[in-house]
Image 1: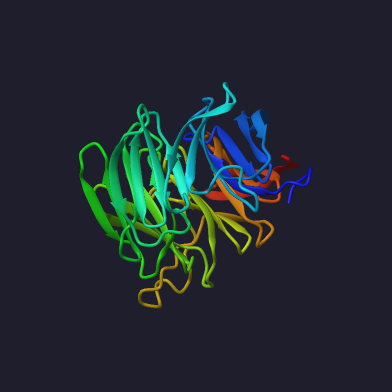
Image 2: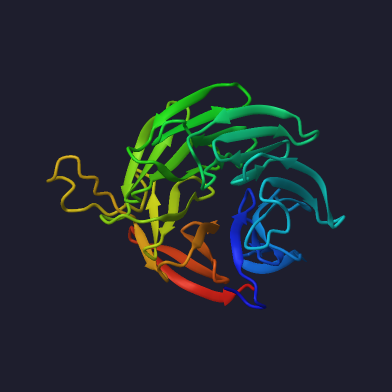
Length: 334
């Protein structure tokens, strides 16, 4: 819950993580992050809830889907909202609820229960349709660069399809034995990180070849992965779960910082013992999205937004090959 008797229903970010948005039971609000400081950009109060909001960089255009106990729009309808005009300017309607949406400058990606639709942003013409396994969480990953690359669950559990919308090329990745629970593309879309419903392992894939290039362990016990994302330079991954720990992993094989390795990884055959290079404990069982803020070698920051309405910032420093994550700020945002 947050203040003013409104609850946060969803948390989302724009393409370069310079803004984030909250959908609430009474509308939505958009914040900018400037030099790691928050600034409210715009908000709208409705007589109903927004369950999905997606941003288009720092523009006035957002995609909205109704949600919560009293949705302001039907959950089966995607609204393109122009905040300059304070009204919806286009809509797309479906037979089943919209589970997720992503915006790029020239395309709109919409996820429903068993399909992914790709539209031309200029005229809303349908360009491509992809079938998936049942996808109630709306799992989708879309490149944040100019590349038109998307990743989505296959029709088979545990598999992911990476598609290049420009060339038509695609790769099928047998990512996990269990159903996919989270995934994210690196900024240049050359890497994909995935997690399964067990939430114990993260696997990193080369999107062009469909080959595994890394594997990391979160822990031994099952967990629900809340969020996962790459750093802007694609060299680090940050993730968190309902267990209440933020984990940071490095993808650099020969960098100054190394991930921790379990003492059992060389003893027990098949045991993946590569853990994160640093971590920080936060409140468990509170939905939280984590992402990278500014990067200025040798320092960088991680930020977190909670469904209870808190913003947190963590500074990460490196000293003699060891990374440390220290909380620098915690403040309410609603």
